[in-house]
Length: 449
Ligand SMILES: [Zn+2]
Image (cartoon, rainbow, N blue to C red; front, side, top):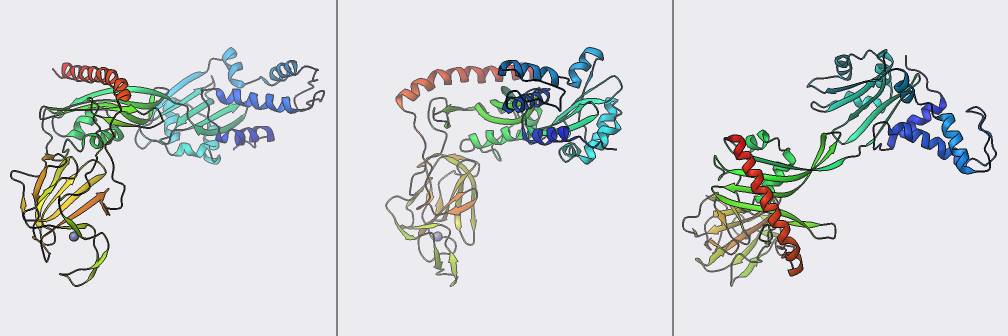
């Protein structure tokens, strides 16, 4: 049976439902603080009948200590003196239920189990994730005095027993930021290597986005490629709550060293830069064809070949066949192909967000192939009239997260340049990061050999 909570205990449970507790038994302290606060706002000289007779003297300080002593009967502290509480720590396994975990801890507490079923906050313990940890303290007879669990969302659910009463609370957990350094070497695949190095998926994704304009993670990785990454992570009681941001990273692809470092702008933001201070963010030049005019913009138009109204999802630049077409930003060629509509076309991925497409080409630049990196302004082909067209022009598409947008109206990302004073602050940091990254790589190599 679930005990019916007396008014005071029930209100504890409610009051505590949305607070965060920085320390394990902070719920106790908070309860007491609430009572202290309640005592402080009572008019002086009043008697607190609910807690025995406490006469308030003329001095507030004295009142506080009297009330505090009267109320300070937390079960845990008295237990600590009389019976030693036992502490349990259990890692959640796949398919675990709260009952099963408690059984593994050797806890037999039917009142607690009933409470978890009936209390709205405590019911969150029904969704346990493998790998997470359940902490519990129990007294000599096996009753749980305190239980806590941090969910995947970084919310801590805590159950506390006070006498015969159980109350549950939940709130954002307090975390510490830790800096982690990991390295790996590719044997089969990049993801296998990041898994082996125990790098969280979110960090792996950041790593890909960071170097996407310099390394083609789909086509050009090879066995022996190495990476090192320094990143921040939020930690609670030794377990990772959530991964944060990459501080610095190094990727060695086919012997080419790519490095990046986060540099805060001092205004709450920041950006990634190569260790020489150049920006990793893509800047775009506005036109892929020099000396041309726009013959059709990004709009609804009557298709001259298909004779239907269609959304024109790009911009057409009219120019004579053979006019040079240039990449509008650094990137990796993800597609170099021919199709019925586009004719000969090239698609370039610039980073995790931006890509561009160049269609109806009469020719591709010599030797160009998928997976190859190109730099801004590099000639990638020539204007033509291959595919579904009536005359020579370049059809240019600008995509954000795979969706075509109008490159003439969208705010094009600009590669940021560090100012001279910024560079002065950047340089020593970059030197230190370079040292740490190469150290991380050496440690990894030593472990492998
Ligand atoms: Zn077009």
